[in-house]
Image (tube, rainbow, N blue to C red; front, top):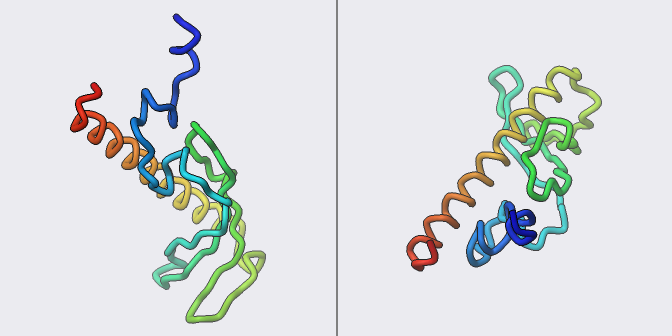
Length: 119
């Protein structure tokens, strides 16, 4: 295998084509700012603020997600008020959400590459 093929992976031009600007395209500039996800506590919808480290070229795991705040009915609460099992469930759901969006971005990039006749 050539050195060029050994270094290709998510984010390189051969795999992704031109940059898409999608937040989960690994080439998109990101200051790793906090994000928000809608989750549930029993059946009550809550907004969960989170920080996802940069897992460039890798899939996110629950351990990569840091819950920074929880907002219920407009009231911001410290995540430490919630049971560890609840936080872990939210972390897993957020990681799955991010991975799904990254997969969708990769699929869109592949379709774009095919439409441009690069495959």
